[in-house]
Amino acid sequence: MANYPSTYWDQLYDQNLLGWDVGNISTPLKTYFDQLSDKSLRILVPGAGNGWEVEYLYRNGFTNTFMLDFSKSATNRFKQRFPAFPTHHIFTEDFFEHQQTYDLLIEQTFFSSLPISFRKAYANQVFQLLTDGGKLTGLLFNHEFPQNGPPFGGSAREYRDLFSSQFKLDTFETAHNSIKPRRGREIFIIARKKELI
Image (cartoon, helix red, strand yellow):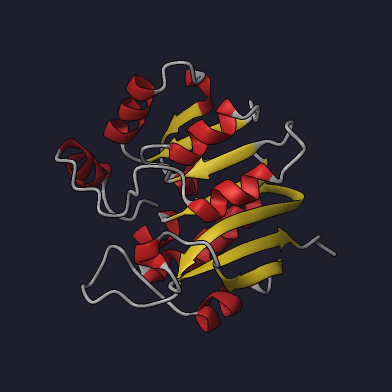
C-alpha cells in the first residue's frame, strides 16, 4: 500500500531535494529521548529518511532501534553515514506491509508524506505494530501547506479524531521547543495504544 512509488523518493534523495530534513535530530524528540530510561525498548522509526533520530537513539544505548524507509537511496545514505548501525535493523520496505512489533514508534515528518486518504490506514498500522500499551510519539504539522503535497498538513481536531478511537492521547500539545522555522506549527503527541476489550 505505497503512497508515492519508491522511485519518487529515491529521486529526491539522489538530487538532495530534502526540504523536510533539518540535518539533525529534532529538538522535541531529542528532549523526549533524553528522559527515557528503559534502553531495552524496541523502537521503530518509519519513514526515517536520513535517520537522524535512529542514529541518536542507537548512539545513546537504545540498541533495539530499527529504521524503516521506502527509499533504497535513503537507507543506503544512512548505511554509508553510520556504518556501525546493524544492517539487520534496517528495513527498506513499505511501512504498510511491515509486520513486526515495537514498544515505541517515532513520528518525524513521515505522516506528512502520506496523502490524507492514507491516514486511517496509518493509524491502523501503527496500532498493529505496537505492543499492548505501546506508544506513538512524535510531531505532526499543525497547519496546511500551500501546495498539493507532499507534505500534507492538517489540524489538531483532525488528528484527535483520527487517533482517539485506538489510542489514549497522553500528550497532545503545541511543541514548545520546535526549531525556529516550525515554531508554533508542530503538535507533540504521545499516543498510547488502548487495550482491546
